[in-house]
Every structure is written in C-alpha cells, then in structure tokens.
Amino acid sequence: MLPADCQCFVLNLARAPQRLAAMQQRLQALGIPFTRIEGVDGATLPEAARAALTRINRYYKPLRPGEVGCYLGHVQALRSFLATSAEFLLLLEDDACFVDGFTDALHAALALRRNETDTRRQWDVLKLCNPRRRWLPLAALTARHCLVEYGPSVPSTTTAAVWTRQGAQRFLAGFHGVARPIDCDLQHPWEFGLRILSVHPAVVMAEPVPSTIGSHKPKSRNPWPKLRYEARRLWPRWRHFSRLYGPWFWLRWQRGERCPPVETRS
Image 1 (tube, helix red, strand yellow):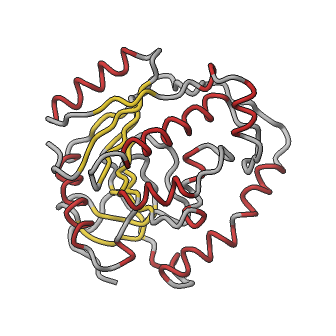
Image 2 (tube, helix red, strand yellow):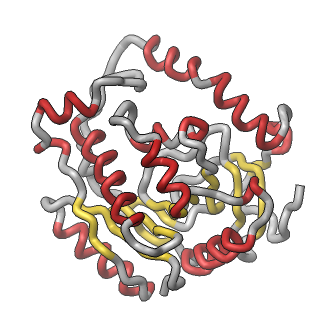
Image 3 (cartoon, helix red, strand yellow):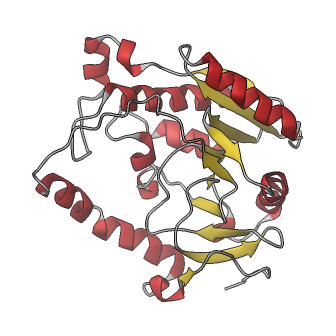
C-alpha cells in the first residue's frame, strides 16, 4: 500500500492495453491502487500542433513525434496530480517492473522527505530507475538502499519517479513547449528550480519491451551537434552542483553497487 498522501498514476497509451494489464498485475501484487492516465500518442498529433509545441529546439537533433507525445503525457499527469489533494505522486510508465525492496525504500524515502530539514535532501523529484556507477550518498533509507545524488548528470528515462506537489508546480511553471525529450529536460534541473535525487540501488527497472515512443532513432554522422549540446551545459551544470555541494564535490563521489547502511551527514 501507499501512504495516504501519495497517489500512483500509470501512463498508458490507448493502443497498448496489454501493457496496462501487465502493470495492473504487478501493482496488485504490491497492493498499490493506481489511476490510469492516458498518454499522448505523438504519432497522431496534428502536424500543426506538433510544430507549435516544438518551435524552440534545445536538443541536438529533431524531436521525434513519440518524444513529443511522451513529454505531453507527463505534463498531463502532473496537471492531474495537482488537481488532487495528494502531496506526492508515484508516476510510472507502463513498462515499470519492481525490484525486491521497492516498497520499503519508497516508504522510507517519503518519510524522510516529510521530516527533512536539510535542503540538500529535500527532493522535488525522486528517481527510482536507471542507476549510475558513481554517487554521493546523502541518507540511509533501508539496510540496502540510500538516498543519493547521481549528479552531475541526472539519470535518463522517466520509467518511475516520485514527484512532490511543489516539484510538479515548478516544473509546469517552466514548461513552455517541448524543447528536449522530457528525460533530457530533467537533466537540466537548474532551469526549473528542481532538486532531483535518486534511490540507490534502483528499485524499478524497465521491462525489456519495445518502446512506445518508437525504436527508430535518426542517426547522424556529424558528431558536432551533440558535442555543442554537451558543451553548452558544462558550465551551468558545474555551477549548479558546486552551489549545492562545493566546487570539489566530485572528489566525494563514491563507486560500487551498494550504499553504506549508515546515514552520511556531510
């Protein structure tokens, strides 16, 4: 079960009922009720509407229709969340699979967030999927899981995350169109005023099924657009994490598969 102040939404396209059925079975096994939020199928968006939403492109290549639809689905889910009285939203895509220890880690992370006074641990978005090899441990959650900072690069994918009400409000206030895929936009938390932390090791994994965004990614033999994209965010990224943890934060990064089971109060 989820705490009373946390809701669960599952993003699902109308053309993927089998994925919804699989998610229903997985969540029922955990005793977690959920609300289905119908995703936006970018392939069916009118060309004029898609062009209006993507007038500004801050990515290194053109956005695919599925990426636009995925972004709009998350926006729709966050707006629906703000229409409720809940303080937290467990937002899942319909390929999320849960690792042993998911429920305990989630409950511990929510309890910590409610009572935390250290701003470095007051996350707006908590990523539950796609771990990194290096991290900065911030607090113990369970004997096996920690609250960590994966920066200076927020984990990609939006398979599973917990949003606070304040985080959703800030993100939607900064949304003015689809300029990047949503997981790449969230790799620029300073643009939205967000604190994005993670549970390590990850407690959710993506089911190995074909993406509803579309598997075909246009390839380019020209590496310069991506290099320019990465170069432009070097300084903002460094400044953001230096303000949080000091200019030599990278010296404190740890490596391994498990976090220490004791809380790190640095």
